[in-house]
Length: 399
Ligand code: PLP
Image (cartoon, rainbow, N blue to C red; front, side):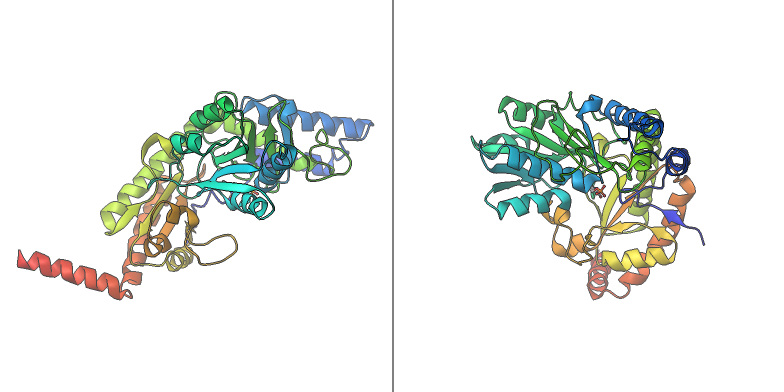
């Protein structure tokens, strides 16, 4: 059976060039980068080289990059770190209703422990209003944390405009760029960002590696204490093969970003068009055009449960993701889709397809061959779809 992977927003395969380089640092160049001997020094040099590659891809200085165990830890370090460092100035934090749980849950934890949270709404395409951000800022606001691109619907937020306001009002601005970094241009200086989270496994690097950009001069209290690695911001022996792999993945992303984006957007548009032609009662979630991640497609297929669709697709070898499946395995509809104003019922029937480097036109053709059949079969079990179809036929007959 054909296997088609369309879940690159969840994770990507490690690029063979990345894996090959990493292997050297597992078996041959395994020195501890803190050691003074030659084994340590060669690893340290490669680690610093990786730091430079990560920094280059976002227009930062290498000293502004702190490696972590991934996007989740970087989000936690940014939010807790600023909350603690600036608590004398105030305890008010601004975020949005469509953030990843790594941000929302961290902010909510703080809200239960003496901090105040403003959660900004989004419009029907998932955009935050820059005006809303400006209005929410108070004298005691210490942090604005807003994502760059949404992981479910691909909406790209007006980060540069929000950054400008944050700078004018002297409020620290953190951006979760896990889904955009390496896929679309990201420039911390042009976007006026103070802190930025990135992750390796979304861009063909290994899992369990990420980084936090910390602009020079911004204070962050560390969460992990110990040997003082990472300029005392994140202690613990560095995951050198992982970090070096992340650096290589950034170099490859810099070379391939434009061509990957163009190809993936074309495949994504072909799939959307094909779905719209073949299936009725389908809604595109998120915007069209350049303010959407190139590889992201999210649709709601009415009168069907997303989970049932996912399982049926999986039986045919197709890997996608459902907005309703949250990481904890609960079947609650996606908080992102609900924030965009979708009803529970429509949010439940949503599917995310996310494209990557290996996908081809044949993959899209295969999904377009399988998906309509699956939808038809599942809708046969839906009394609501039957009713809607029946009344439509009656209306057509009466004309
Ligand atoms: N932030 C966003 C927007 C994400 O999509 C993800 C992962 O899906 C994370 C944070 C967490 O990153 P990691 O898996 O590296 O911990």
